[in-house]
Length: 430
Image (cartoon, rainbow, N blue to C red):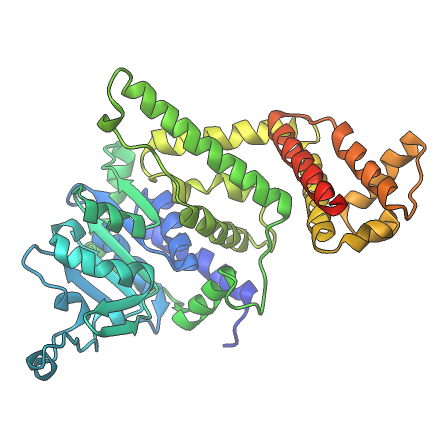
């Protein structure tokens, strides 16, 4: 069958529903896991024993055909060759560490590592570049890996410098808590009595090659088809993330009030994680049959920034989302951000090409969100647009200065652009 985005979206939703029907009361974790597969990232599942982490992983793997799968039960005695393949004895005699990677995690599409923190730090450290850069680096051997997604499971977290680095490689994290609700327990028992905890095969499986092609599109590597994020939505996303990071750290300071800062670590969202959240936005839009990300996608970014299954973290992110969203929706905040970002684009163009100021602004601004707003503002001021550089500079300076922000978030952006305007225009004059 030819590759079809519409069909693939339908098949992925059907697959997600199939897994959710078989794995009871795990809808949110399953949705998060499918997002991990769509974005080509790894997911860590934490829970007590016996809640079906392995079954969940294997059932998701079963939804795809044509993918090679590596499985391992981690232990402290294992060495890196468990994951990278056995050592080439002949090369070892010459002092070179060289792994035969055939059939190893390096050459697999999917991986399942059970009880990952039972592995020793030496082995975990060796896995870091494989999980992040998709490269196996051992001695003089440096080879690319085709690994797409690893699902790791653990009953506990072991904290060390190495394990913290490993945790950072798992962009998606969830905690699966046992549910003692009688109805949920009944449904689990009924499902088990029918299938005895076995992995079920769906009527239709998704080609792994199609998943891989979609993931490359979502990440922007394959430009055959583009999933878009508008400038104002991108700015809004960053506002929500910043607010969430600030609120998490404020809660930490309150919890450890009176103690030294060494008693706790600040909650930190790395630029890499923040950038990768944009892939999740595109994936969420795709799963909803859209090509453009919206605010409803931003609300689900807790799949990355919070631990699914921990209500306090999820609610903290949602609270940040609603705080910023309500502030912008209380007036025309989104429209103001759209106009200000268009203004910022104009400033960038002027900085690169000063002759723009020699031309009438209405022609320069054609087909931009700023054009109509600026023209309407000029009518109110009874000011025309001419080709005089000083006139055009004054027009732009007065326009940005007189814009009245509807909330603090817009005010902050406006103030930053006022500074940019002054800097660029002073540079032109000099």
